Image (cartoon, rainbow, N blue to C red; front, top):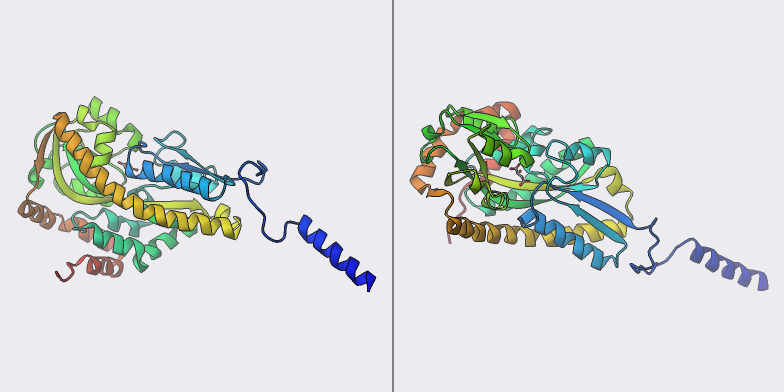
Length: 344
Ligand code: LMR
């Protein structure tokens, strides 16, 4: 009898020492070696939808994990530029990134659907695709490169800026050189109208506009405003011709070795921040457009819906090019999701 009791006591002590059962986590008590550090690198300013969401995510995770998980945010290409950050994530030099979908499309061509001009007429269809099975298919592709896609964030619709003349019809693009975020569809989008396209990392855009290496670029209001492109661009066409969104991605090996509880906390917080981020993107793009209007540095022209329809028709070669590259099926599924829903 006595022997059995001792066995139970010894078992309890051993289990206790080996850390079984619930461990109370207190940020101050966490051993530095146990702390989970997530380096989150991105290329935009802090006062942008992605920049603010990354900070919010880091703060919520610190609070909710009592300091045992630390998300360290590195904005503004401080650690890695475009073209470097995906490689850095695959290698494990950083654990989290949120590149524009266009940059992911350099590895996985189906991601170019996000770049198709005038495919998405509103954010509702964008979100349905992002959060549904088609979005999941795209995110799963990342696993081939030691990455895991968790969620997708918004920035918003892109517009055109340049420093030569107002752009109202597609033929106004002729002869101008535009900076593009990636090769492929974006290149075709400009070349289709006799314009030239040059791939440049985000961090180099301001200087290239200033020095005349390119005459124009396409971006969201938030990126135009926070990078002060209006100092080096005379014309803004509110064209809403393309969408700019992000994939929030982690290093797969790092993710798989995290304790289940940490993964759950990170995932649920990320889902919550995603809703917040999308709302913030909408708000910021509106507020910052007003700021640009007040600054009066650029001449701003808004395309009418008839003008937008004319642009869309002229982009048919861009759609055919993508269809040839990725096959018709995936594109057809995406197009179906973008068809106008019944009006109520
Ligand atoms: C760009 O390169 O213009 C954007 O993709 C930057 C960003 O991350 O919003």
